[in-house]
Image 1 (cartoon, rainbow over the protein chains, first blue to last red):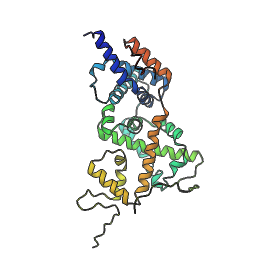
Image 2 (image 1 turned 90 degrees about the horizontal axis):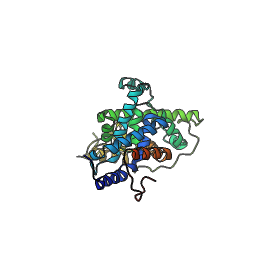
Image 3 (image 1 turned 120 degrees about the vertical axis):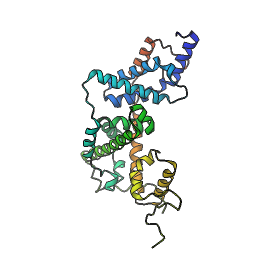
Image 4 (image 1 turned 30 degrees about the vertical axis):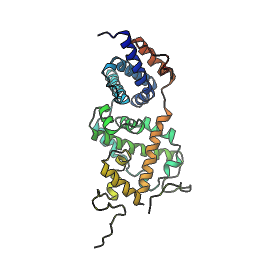
Length: 205
Length: 104
């Protein structure tokens, strides 16, 4: 049914105010899925077009960012299905990859100061970019986009337990990559600190 | 048998009991605020008292904060923003110029 001019103005206005402000967030998520700026550009356009056409189905007052992330994820899956050249790891393979990751990273090696000696911004961005799916989207949604496990599960279309498992393994993989990054950068291994301990708040004794 | 708790962060009577191993296992869920209220409180209390677990908490918190900071470093390029607005306009979207959201 066609909207009256006044209804159309209201439709566009609410979309502009409630959906467009999340463009940076949707772009970041799209980029984390595609790992390619041109593809992310396409996915973001597709996401917003679909969101605009379905705006009447959006429940006002609900989480617009979560809704857009879901559309974005679906747009990505459709694109990938069409392209059929990108192979995603299945959970069985994921287990194999994860089992190769050393559990003993920074904290468990006894050096929480490792993080303070790394220039974390570039190192983490690069590590996130290298992180394989399906870990990357779980880490991006929960750790970068601050989504709850429940929201991430809904967006990714998987059970909460799967989100938790992917998230934790993704984090361990990231920590492993950061440890390697530190070694490559010539930063001494965690067991041989060369700088004074950084003051951190201590627990009450 | 001594009445003293074996674990420095042991819970008082009636509270949810957690030991170091459980705290370390659930540290990420605690940092994500994904544990139930009672467990959140139990882990919080344990971390306040336990000098063994606290450095782990400190490290993992710094790690997760650092990942969260990635949010501030990536924004949609201007071109992407323009492409989205153009595509929406072609679909009939007519932005309210006064609202200024489109031009942000």
